[in-house]
Length: 465
Image (cartoon, rainbow, N blue to C red; front, side, top):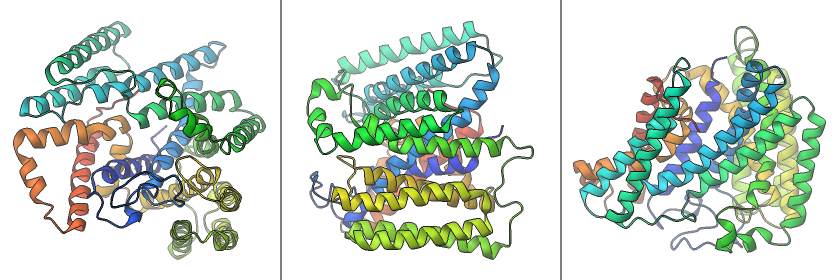
């Protein structure tokens, strides 16, 4: 089975958004260029602020991509072990991936010494980045297990030595509380989501029950304020976060979308939703309707037009479903799910009184999942029309190598800039008083980073947890 290019591209776009949003000019851009709850100019976190911006979308989109990928990869592994050992092998594989993801959330933090002064700290960071290759590299299938174990063990020893060196040489703090919060959260989401999918893979009713249980738990605990209360306790938050459960409201529907796509990818000849459909103009109307609705929803939630958003969502989702049924019927089920979640999320905003990323609200999970489904449909269109273009290949290549893409800028590109002196050009590229030039600079260097990772992917140099 070939890789699903659209999913890789959407994942790549979400990673681009994560890195890009972290390095744009601080405090001088409009509020919609940052997390809504961290408004400029001081970016002080404010739980009372309602709304979402494009920055608030990138993480749930990545969670959605993870959920879609679970059935695609899971069915492939299931076919390799159809006997009774299949359950144990799947669980072992999930546990291994969880541990490696969990470990990665610490390693890339402990191996980054770039905040220390001097070129040696930057060079050590680059060496630390390179040391992750033998630990997370996807070896050829014909490589003996013995050699894999030897290489991984040697890499783990090397990484440990570099971390110890960094601790004593650069005063890098080694602590169980110092993890990359996003990767740490994704590790637990993957563990729970992969197990839920596996044990409900042939029974959607039970998956609906699991989704209902998560929804009920979320609806009960959010008003109690458990998430911020528990997160405020350092002894708890280092290993447990209520969002492990809340974000399953995104991941579980995504696994159903993944089921649909996995079946289509298994069809002889591959999956092409635009292969035998009507003319370009008809498909263009669908794409335009989806894009306009996403923009409206973002605007309405940003401005607080909650009642209007319910009316427009009912109308728009109905129109989109009709257009999809007539022009691209392969998307009918996805459009029904997206419509249901968009309308339910719009109603939930009224009931909850706001839509916020932190603390996570039900409306946030529902609406971002709906937008993610629509974005995947748009990604299908882009990959179909421009699949061979350089920019699509950059995003898809980086999206197929997410661990490397996520840390390459901070752990490889920026330290290299400092070592080689390119950092002087980088700093000069943002003249004081011109914040949008700073935005362009950020986009350029992140695109450069993703192009490097995409080239790695083309050379089959993949990192996998």
